[in-house]
Amino acid sequence: MRRFDVSPIRASQDCVQCPNLKGGSRMKRTYAEEWRFRISVLRVGKSNEPQRCRLGFEVGDVFECCYETPGDFCPKSMLKVFPVMEAVRSGGDLRNLGGDAPCEMTLTCPDGEVAFRVVGTRGVGT
Image (cartoon, rainbow, N blue to C red; front, side, top):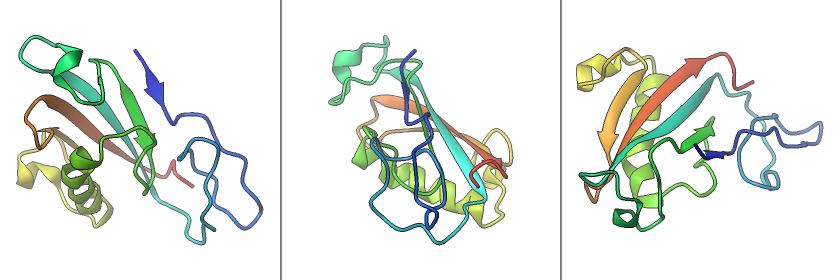
């Protein structure tokens, strides 16, 4: 299993520490994030074929983030993941959108090749 964006960055006193972009964030963080998200790759293609994904995602790859797009994550897939993250942050229940639990949902990438599981956890992004 490959893991992405799980080591803490070194931030200045003006920044909120949250594992995000490799090498640290260039943005000054002024908001302490309340939610942390884990995005796991469940399936690639019909037979878990990494070559079906343009970025070579493999089953078991894990991405973690608070608010930002995790480094090395697919920008097209983030178009589907970000609204799910916003629903959780806003107090929504993902079961109303077909999720498995209030803060967990499985979805596929826009190309239909990669299945992801998004899990939100409160209180660990600060």
